[in-house]
Amino acid sequence: METLLLFLAGLVGGTMNALAGGGSGVTFAALVFTGMPPIIANATNTFAATFGYITGVIGYRKHMTGMWRDLIWQAPLVFVGGLIGGWLLLQTDPAAFAAAVPWLLLFATVLFMGGAKLEQAARRSGTRRVKLLGTLAIFLTCIYGGYFQGGFGILTLAALSLGGYTAVRSMNGLKLAFATISSLAAIFLFAYEGKIDWLGGLAVLVGIGLGSYGAARLTDYVSDSTVKRASLAVCWLVTVYAFYSTYG
Image 1 (cartoon, rainbow, N blue to C red):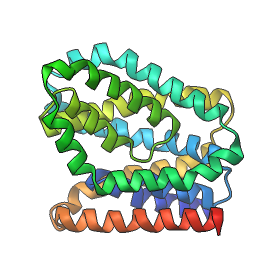
Image 2: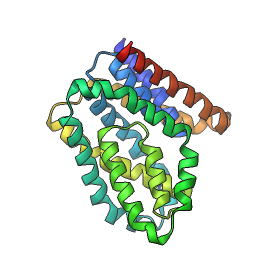
Image 3: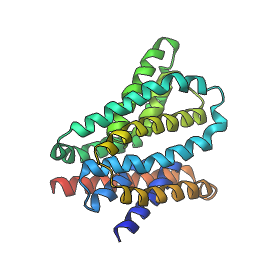
């Protein structure tokens, strides 16, 4: 029964991530709901989400022509950021992390709600004189991604805008490439410390893969605004539940 729940959560989360974003909060909440300690659930969620990142990079490869040179020199920075984020998670007291989870989910939900404005504000600042600031923003974002997945995609797009990138499809490809690299770095630490529930992670992973694939076909029938409203509603439900279960 738990495996089915995790698969369905992955299906919903994968669909949300492919169409609008916010799916990591759903899969994380489902992992915690099955009884996993929050830190193990977060590490497992990172493992499961990485499959969707990899397939996303493959899907965007045609739009990343000319971006590979940037990716090559930025990849080590992104990897180190993911390692730092994963290390910080492992140093966090489990009780403190459990208490912080609702606030992290709230932060991710608010980011999702105002993501377009955040990216536009960053893009207006995307001049050559702040290129280094954009690189620093990417590094800090990858630290956050190694620590917690919720809101990572929106933060990365804003950081890329700040660095002067403007082509949305190319930015999405770079975002997923960065997510893959930083997540693999964190997964290395999580696996070494035995913090990943592989069976639960595989159930979510399969759901994410199918959800991402199905989302590509769903776009022909559902408008972007409808998808975003539905995704945002799910994000708020997950956040409210997290506050209730932690403090209620």
